[in-house]
Image 1: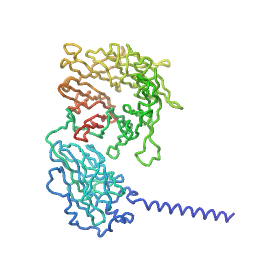
Image 2: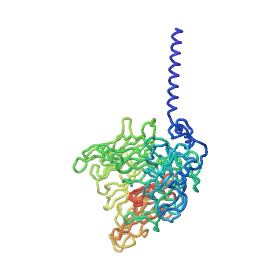
Image 3: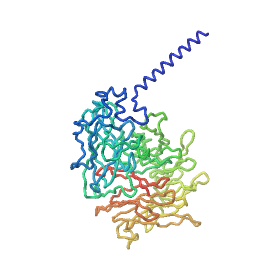
Image 4: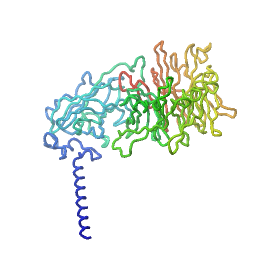
Length: 638
């Protein structure tokens, strides 16, 4: 028995030593710079045995002089060339360099002094790397402060490499140049940030340190010496850049472009309790669209694609997303069962739930999981429906325009259960006095449902209420629009903390003479209305009109939001195609002031977070390209 125990003990020690030895060997193969929270500089890394062997020769002395070859390198400090906006040279090459990959960000300030609307078209910088390495690409961003703040440009760009010269530490010091469609900047101070540098060898990449006049920073270290770089571009005397006949707004008075995109994605954003933004874009790796997150980390907004739709029964993305009570996302896709539509072959649509991937996912790039919680059927179901809001019990409500028992739209409820979700059509519109083709829905503070519909008693739309009673739901029409000065076709219903309902409509001046909306005959003006509960019913009032806000044949409101403090904000825009005139504003309706204005009809949605900041998306006018053909996710801080 004792000999058996000794044998087992010896075997255990042998296995333990083998495991420990294996772990030591594994750790030895991991570069030291990936094990430290603070990355080594290039000189520190050159002294590490595991990396020094990759360099051309060992370190000769701790503080070598600048070699004549590096001193005469292309990048220099002196008079600016014709296409240089800012020069922070010269290339030093023998002092030190700072990491720009493995999750570390190096930032450096630069000045624009050529006047407003200075277009950035590229950059050059000096990089340290092991002999034989080639820098393929890096993430370049231009912001209002180090590692973050307002983002004016943020893209992965490709670099061309030239003029590589060996330095005293065994590295090659190379000039890296990239051309890109950068932002148009006004005079002032900005920050250039480099990160996520990549090469085929996967080695560290470093940004050359010099004695330039700028300020520099590293995200895990703080203030560091300045780096050698040049900003390329050209200046212009104009103050705006056009897309077609648009004159796009620039960063102004708290208005920021958080992220540009070059795919359809102007369906707005949803905000979770932590202030993260979520939305949907067309395109993606598979083509039918992606769900994204824009989250703030260490003062920077980081964009992540969460899920790519695959088309077919899996669906194409439809509209935006909403955040559920458990913090996950819900939305609609046009997949599901293929027996709907006029020809009976279109997909009926589905409602999906989007949840994070496994907790053990080693990177931030792991895909989220799409789970269809209900697939609509043909006939009287709410096919083609989309989710709108949750109630306090976790039930999900939504609307469908083509579905319902009468084909005039429906309101549906999805109730969670242990085996999944159960759908109930709680109201089918007839298209008569009760309305038809619903356009918005919200869960009121009293638990009742409120919404708007295109059709109504006078044929101009209405605001409705659905009250749960006796195991069913009863509709009450709160207001029917007449098509006169009260407008027609309401939308964008919101409720403030006092229970008042707010929405928008428009008034058409060709209905009567003299013009009933003010202004000129033939023009279309937007209006914002309120419905206030009273002892005798609901009192309708026109609170605000867009008449006179900007010139144009059509000038209407596109969206509303009420913040936590009760302030009302609106997205407004208009077009006069005859005169090629455009208008777009973000308005504070409470104080009747224009917060952001421009000659581009780009503001189609708006929402607010718990701190009162406003967010939305556009289909064009992103700050990232001179052509302004891309859209953006914007933020406004009142």
